[in-house]
Structures are given as structure tokens and as C-alpha cells.
Image (cartoon, rainbow, N blue to C red; front, top):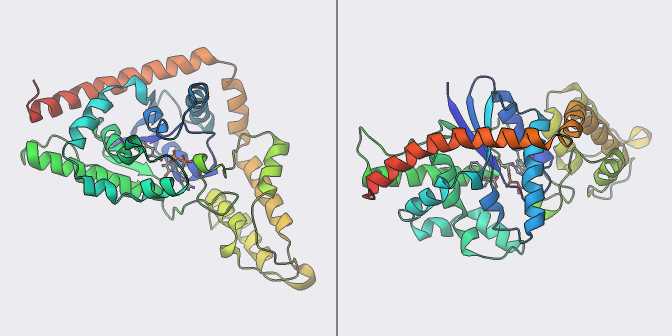
Length: 330
Ligand code: ADP
Ligand code: TRP
């Protein structure tokens, strides 16, 4: 069985981009893969400054994972700060990582351009991410398109480390493959930019019905009137719709036709937003009910995390011992 690892930062409420770009892939794979999925709590410190808020967000991501349908009897769910081996491994990897490689990371530049403080933690973020990954010897790392560069950095660091410290027959790290969701595009947020927890432009599928509708109505559009035909591909509303329902879905095709209609049969953006609202309510009907139950059962969440960390720590102990010994520590 192939081993899979991925993680999500607890930097705010999960949104449709996280679902379409990441979580849906875990759900598809959980029956026939060994899955390690974690909450990237250390990574969140690169953007978070409020302890209570972080604590709450960490908890919420776990609840949301389970609500979306991750099954703890099929996958290991854990918190990054319950597996401290990744920090030690990050140091070892940082020592084979050329600074120039971090200089090229586009996520760092994007985040700084958005006003996030340019800390050393933010700068070396991809090294810690490489440690998260290499620590469990995964075969594949499923992520959204925006994370591809980080996985390439991970592969490169693993190869550098193996080249320096390993042998052909006994590499220190397994070099994992990236897995991008087919046709996976970056899902735009209500402002048309990449939907992101840290940009405040997300759509949270667990919002109460009324605020959810209001949120969707906030999606920015151009000012074309209903009578004017529109290209669905130019529309943020449509792009989000496609990310959820898929291009082949009958509902998507119907909506595309509505965009192209003109004159008295033309469509206003309010109609497209209503269609998206209904799609979200329909897609997440079961998840919304599950989440309400999970919120009432904190003991269950604790138990899931305890088991997940035990499984991850067991694997990481072996990998860390290999890496330490390879570099000459012990
Ligand atoms: P955020 O940018 O909201 O903080 P993360 O960086 O924690 O989200 O991303 C968690 C996972 O969700 C990653 O695998 C990432 O590729 C995916 N993801 C995040 N935002 C999007 C998006 N807008 N479109 C597609 N996938 C996304
Ligand atoms: N950087 C990822 C993101 O922002 C989150 C993450 C941290 C991650 N460590 C990881 C994803 C390891 C996959 C594997 O989405």
C-alpha cells in the first residue's frame, strides 16, 4: 500500500480552496493508501501572533478534517507539535539547503507582498515542510497547485542529503512524488485572488446558512448587465463552481449556458451566486451535520490525535535515527 502524507496550516477557518485542492484528495485515497495527515501548527506561527486563536484554529482543523469525512480508522491524523522530530530533521535539512534556493521560493515573496512579516521562520518555511514530508517516508504528497514548488524543494533537499550522506544502495531519504489533483486550478476567493485563510477572502462551507449566502453574494464581479452575454471562464463565481462540481457536471454545463445567454434571457451575477450557494449547501450537507456532532465530542478528538501522533512518532523515530547516524551524530 502506498504511503501518503499531507498537511494543512491552522491559520484560520478551512475554505473551499482547501477542500478542492487538498482534502478531497485525501478522501479519495483513504481506503487504499496509508495516509498521514497533520495540522501544520509550527508553520502557522509564521503568520499567527495570537495564542488563543491558534489553539482554537488547531482544534477546528481537526474537527473539519473529520467532518469532511476523514476516517481515523483509515488514516493517521496528528498535530505537528506532537511530533517534535520534524524540528530536528528541519535543522539537518537546513544545513544542506543553499540559501539561494529559499530566495527563489515564490510563496515567501507572495506572503511578504501581502504584508506578512518577513521572519526567518517564514523564509525557511519550505525546509520545515520538507522535514514534515521526509520524516514519514511517503511515496506521494497530494497538494494543491500552489504547493508544487515546495514539494520540488523537498525532493531536491532529499536528493542533496542522499548525495552527501547516503549511498546508492542505502539512501537516507525516500524521494517522494508530488501529486496534483487532476485539472487542479487554484481556487479564487471572493476577491478573485487565490482563496487563502491568510487573505481573508475564503468561503467556509460550514458557515450558517445566512452568512454563507451573504459571503457568496460578496464575490467580486465585473459590471456587465444581465442582458450582456458573459464568458464563464472569466468569472470567479464560475471558477469556484467548477472547482466544486467539476467541469463535466450537468449543473456546471447548465450554468455555463446561462452565462452565455444574452438579451432578455441573459443572466445577472446574482443568479450565478445563488446557484453556487445551492451547490455548496448540497455538496456539504452530510459534512455539516457531522461537524455539529463532532463539536459536542471533545474526548473523541483527543483520542484521534493521541493515536495519530503515536503512529507518526513511531515512523519518525526510525527516519530520524537514520538521518542522525548518516550525518555523524550518534
Ligand atoms: P491557505 O493558503 O488558505 O493558508 P494552506 O496554505 O494551509 O491554505 O493550504 C492547505 C492546502 O490547501 C494545500 O494543499 C493547498 O495547496 C490547498 N489550497 C489552499 N488554498 C487553495 C486554493 N485557493 N486553491 C486550491 N488549493 C488550495
Ligand atoms: N505549506 C502547506 C500549505 O500551505 C502546508 C504544509 C506544511 C504541508 N507541511 C506540509 C503540505 C507537508 C504538505 C506536506 O498548504
